[in-house]
Length: 153
Length: 153
Image (tube, rainbow over all chains, first blue to last red; front, side, top):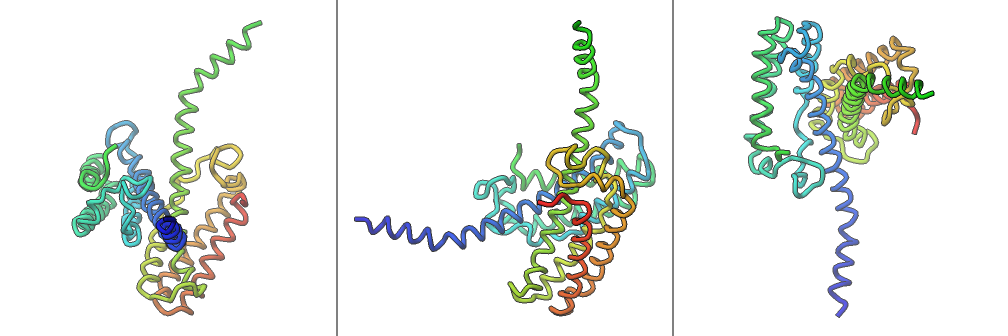
């Protein structure tokens, strides 16, 4: 009568170390990818404020932000999206399970962002209009990936 | 008799929008610099595990982590350390006030890390011994800055 309970307890205790380990690795990956997003957003901030006319255009500030954006988007996405870290399976992430069903598309969208960030690096210091044009493409790359692969707020 | 209270209330209400704004900017900067540290640590992880013999050396994994470390350390420290975001003044940061009294030394220590990360990028794929040597220098750069400028746990 108690056999199923004992079996369940045993299974739990045997699996626990592995589960704890996997969970820890998943948490670290989620934290790392969210950190990359935070830094990308932090550098987009001053450029977006200039593009929207909320602060005066400053070529030096824009260029510094664009340089950071460029370098951040050279970071690989490898190791940031381990299986089992989708929203609904894992806490505290907005990553839709569709990512893991469409890894090639997901990867292509990151390549689009990388290209837009490279263009931005060449344009940010060349005046407000150049900044606005390049920012449109960066924003478009962000949006297309978020639309498909991020749980909306 | 109520004048000081009224003056205090007025001062609070007048300062509030500015304080809220400054606080928001400070919080964003703290979050951004902590994100950069998180990503640096995340990439140091697999290299440290190999160096310590906890996982087998894998040239490809080591190189990918070293490439990420290199690109992360190209991120500028500008905008990450606004005045008023030291531990003791600001919540949730371990940044010692000494940073702002020694900005040149602080900046030089980051340059040391940048150099060590560049060396690591050239060494990580060249075998375990090369990785271990380069990691020693990266670790030393981390430590020298943390010893002087980070509140110990």
